[in-house]
Image (tube, rainbow, N blue to C red):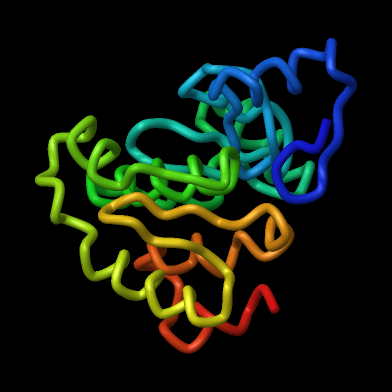
Amino acid sequence: VRIGIDHYARPQDALAKAAATGALRRNFQGYTDDPAPVLVPIGPSSIGCFREGFVQNAVGTDVWRTAIHAGRLPLARKLPVSAQDRVRAAVIERLMCDLTVDVAAVCAANGYPSHFLDGCIETARELEADGLCVVVGRRVTVLEDNRRLVRVTAACFDARLPETQRHSKAV
């Protein structure tokens, strides 16, 4: 069974079952069936994910060990995320996992009005001419033949990605 962009799983595997039921998830590590909203970083250079944002532990083993022995968290970097980042991430995750997303439903589930991401939907609509996606109302769907290019459509919803990279980076 094809999973996401470039993963495969046997039909009886948990990942394939998650994809079939709409429970597939994607995080910075790849596709998963793990519903846990928190990833705790353990060890040097590990990355953690919390509702408030992302953290990365110190990369150097000596720096990491010194912090641990001193009773401090060995954090080297932090990236806070806002409520707006979370709703955008939810839209992107559904596109990356399911190749389709009801943007209005995701907005509503996150406490935003259905029109919150209409500007992003209009940007995605521009990709229709190239056959990369189909936009009907507030539903955006990436065509199966363009599965490997789903990042191009997903980038329409990424406010942190520079405008110049939204259409060319994945191609």
